[in-house]
Length: 287
Image 1 (cartoon, helix red, strand yellow):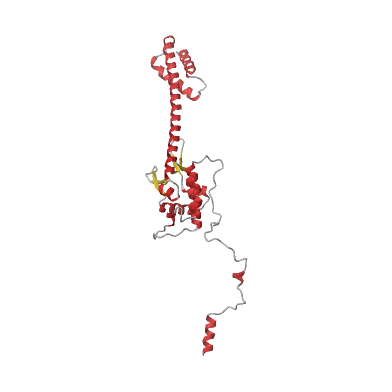
Image 2 (cartoon, rainbow, N blue to C red):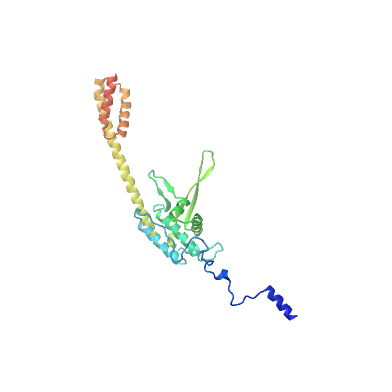
C-alpha cells in the first residue's frame, strides 16, 4: 500500500535528477537580458538633455538649478523629496528610470524657462508669450511621450509645477485646448536647495533688462517719429510757399503729403521733400 502511494506521488510530482539540466533555461541564446521598462535605461549613466550648440548664455540661477538636478537623481531623499510621497501618503523612493525622466523633463523646462515670470515658454517679437507644449518637451528631451506626461504629472502632484489649462473658441463656437501655462514655484527651488532670494534678485535683474530694452525701443521709435514729423513740417512749409505759384488747391495738400510719406516708407533712400516736389510738379502739369 505504501509503495502504491509513493508511486502516485512520484507521477504527480516528478523529481528532476540533479544531473539533468533544462536546455531552455541554460542556453545562452535564449537568455537575453531585456530591461523591464524597454527604455534602454542605464542606472549609472542616466539620460541628459542635449543643450543646443549655438545657445545663448543662461542666467546664473538657472545654471545652478540645472546642476542641482543631477544631485536629485543621485540623492532623491535630499533633493525634491516631495516626489517620493505617493498617493497613500507614505514616502517611497521612485525607480531610477522614473527619476531619469523627471530629471530630463526638468532640464528642458529650466533651459526654456522665462526667468521673469518663471513660465515655460518664450516671448515673441510681438510681445506675446508662447507656451511650449508636451510635444515640444518630447522632441527636445528625446523621451517617449508617455514618460513625459508621467513626469509632468509627478511634478504637478508634488507641488512643484503649477499648470493652468487654456481653451479657445473656433468658428463653430466649440472649445479647443490651447497650450497650457506651466510655471515653476517657490517650493521647487526650496527643495532643490536653492535660496529663493537669489531667484528674486535674478528676476529683478531680468526686469531691469526688459525695461531697458523697452525704453531703447521706444526712444528709437520716438526719434523716428520726430524725424518724420520734422520732414513733414518742412514739406508743409514748401506747400504754402509754392501753392500760390502752382495754383494748388489747399484741400488736397494733406492728401499729397500722405502720399509722399507712403512712398518714403517704401523707399527711405529718397527724402520726403524730394518725393513731394516730384508729386507737386506732376500735379501742376496735370492742372
